[in-house]
Amino acid sequence: MGEMEIIKLDTGERTIIEIDGTVIKDQVIPPKIEWCDRCQMYKELQGGRFDKVMGSNELWYCAACK
Image (tube, rainbow, N blue to C red; front, top):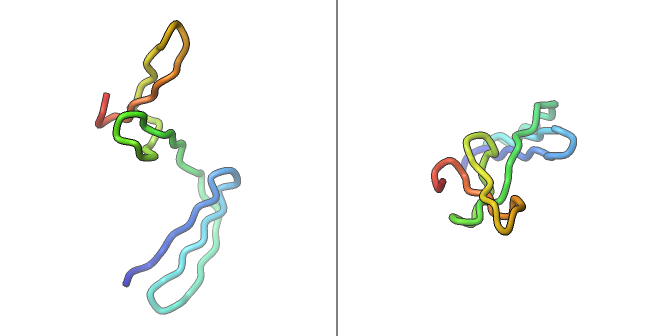
């Protein structure tokens, strides 16, 4: 078992639950993420790219998949 970290992406509220049960709450700048249409996982937006389909940005690929 390890610790767990939960971040609300819309507000930046972070809750950390440590191994001993201690709960820590603070505020962070939430990461910007997007769904990668190739690897089918949420990844950080930075480094990825959108591909155009019929003139509009339809597909997004993460930095590892682009």
